[in-house]
Amino acid sequence: MTDDTAGEWRGWRAAAETALYGPGGFYHRPEGPAGHFRTSVHASPLFAEAVARLLGRVDEALGRPAALDFVDMAAGRGELVTGVLAALPADLATRTRAYAVERADRPPGLDHRIEWLTEPPRGITGLLFANEWLDNVPVEIAETDSAGVARRVLVRPDGTERLGDPFSGAEARWLARWWPLPAEEGLRAEVGLPRDEAWAAAVATVERGLAVAVDYAHAVGARPLFGTLTGFRAGRETAPVPDGSCDITAHVALDACALPGGRVLTQRAALRALGIAGARPPLALASTQPAAYVRALASAGEAAELTAPGGLGDFGWLLQPVAVPDAPGTPLEALLVDVPDHEEQ
Ligand SMILES: C[S@@+](CC[C@H](N)C(=O)[O-])C[C@H]1O[C@@H](n2cnc3c(N)ncnc32)[C@H](O)[C@@H]1O
Image (cartoon, rainbow, N blue to C red):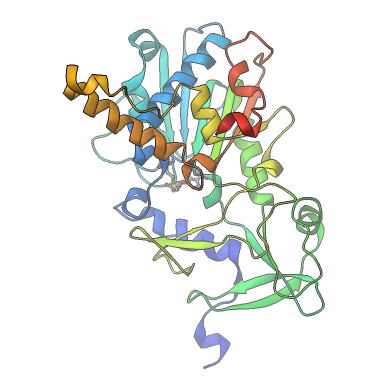
């Protein structure tokens, strides 16, 4: 078989773009992301409740404006924005303008208060929240050749790979700054430049308030040696094949995405600061109010999943304030201060 009959060789960025978002692409499938993997949003309503609480803090920090925006960026089927609206106190709910930003179509039956858009609205006053968006912004993959030179990995729709040209220009500079590869054969990196650009463009839509990106993350100095590119299909991790049959995802260099004033916390620390503790209810409650005890126990189990070490708790929260004070004593302070690791456990 020649290369021509076997299909087109392309960089992973273009290949994943078509596979995920092209006609018939993975994210246009009717079952939506929840048909293939579980995000924090699907894991528990506590997550949307915590985000609603965060929106309340942003509201306070902004001095309770007449209209407050909540933007669910990369909204899937709108599950988070639906949960946030349900969790808001009445006063805040009436002042909130809710948006879902998504490349897939509006799902039938979605709350009529939610505006469905393909791009974030301009001039947001409030909170833009992107849960597991950036890991689905396609990137190029770099791999070192036998001389230790980082080259673009090319892929065919069946997942077969070969090495292309060395990187140059902005991509080479990004690798040198954020993910330098030792000169040893077979090491891999994900060139996060399109994610930095996507994040900067999303943050630019916020006039006043907070932008948050939540994802599996890693930081410079501790990047995985062979990268993290992988696939998901029907609840299972699979080989990443860019044919539209599976999700294609790679962890996010959130430290590279951060703009001045941005900080990265763990989800564990962020949710603790928003009142998700995960403590078991007192046993005495079991005999006095058994139903309440069972509910509290289930809720503690969900909180434990959202904050679990080695799981969702290790996700990164990139917090990017825009023209709001985050000094001591302000409503955002508890979230925007660095939390030392030993306090997170
Ligand atoms: C992993 S899912 C996350 C869905 C949801 N936020 C959640 O946490 O359950 C990623 C979603 O991002 C959407 N997406 C990717 N790039 C986007 C973009 N540039 N604008 C809007 N949505 C995007 C995809 O269509 C997909 O629904």
